[in-house]
Image (tube, rainbow, N blue to C red; front, side, top):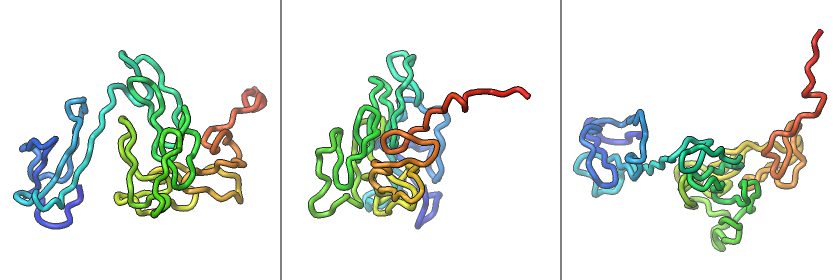
Length: 214
């Protein structure tokens, strides 16, 4: 956490409303071995000033399997989820961030739409919904609408980036404008990339697979 006023020695922590005494006075906390017991809402605030509602809040999501596996025994390999999508650790389905849809999250909804099938209108008064978060099922949780970033979701994507929190890099062909909410939905793609939205690495040709011994 970043302390903007007061003294760090007065910092206090809670998890799901319960005080964590051993973290008192610390602004930087590390949980070395995260388990599902650590899931929840963490609060950091100055002692005796919690009621001012100026403290920091973080929600921790913990998967039951590593990022690349799912299932009861975590023995199944996750599919590739594009555009910031995350594989559900139980079902193996891709959970798409706000603004994307499809089995692999490869389809962009376009500015001002979101939801699993892109039928939800973000806003008729505030198109694109800057300063708003969209919350989808865990293990992805809440994030900015496609095309926006920063803690308040008011920042716009810089050149060459798109998606929820602007975390995805565009791979459009030179001269093609990157759409901050969808990327490169109409192509063409830069060399080495292909597929819907140019998010996939292009397959190598048979000549590129060959090895030569001199």
